[in-house]
Image (tube, rainbow, N blue to C red):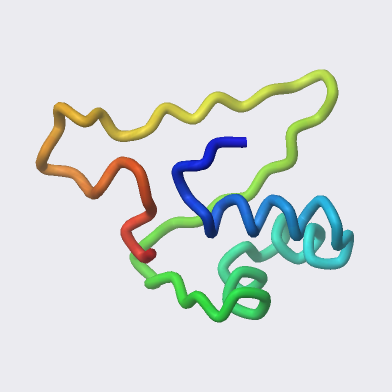
Length: 79
């Protein structure tokens, strides 16, 4: 797990330890994060949560550091 975002780490850890939270996170990530961490994500930010399976892997390519017109690369814009 990457150490670039402490909130991301906390969300993943809670999902590993709390099955009810994980189900809510997968169904409605915005509400799950708000309820568990008191972090309100702005409506203009799209949030998706997916769970890797043993036979699948998701590679997320972040915004390029060279593209200075976009939001901060290391942390979400709502953090």
